[in-house]
Length: 137
Image 1 (spheres, rainbow, N blue to C red):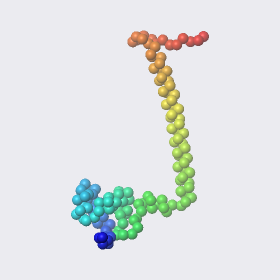
Image 2: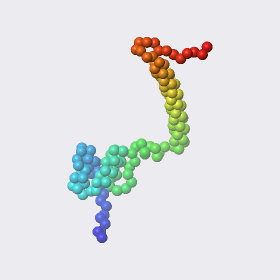
Image 3: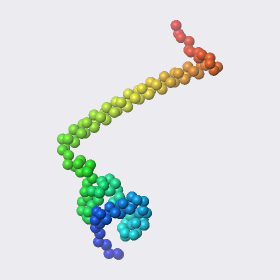
Image 4: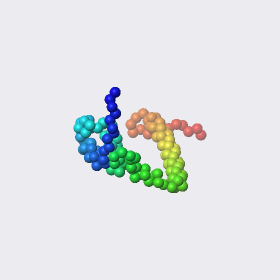
């Protein structure tokens, strides 16, 4: 068996330079060969950079710095989160009501259009007024 390689640590600046080269369109496979780094690791760095910017890239080994949005979410007050959840649910219910009303409107107009098209079918000649069904008086 091959002896295990000791994991290398890479500085944040190094990772940024690699990600910049990837973002510039450089071939990732060639870049991985040049740097002797596995491609999946390069893609991980790029994805971390895209989701959290420069701060998301770790400096050497250790825990990654969370993106600002995630960091803020972790530091929030639980009661504020509960209020936000209630507000989000209220907004969802409001939007669902609007969608329901729009569906009712669509059904009404589809039915009206169907009646209009049906009354036009009774006309046999262009320009002639369409006949309508006899009323039952």
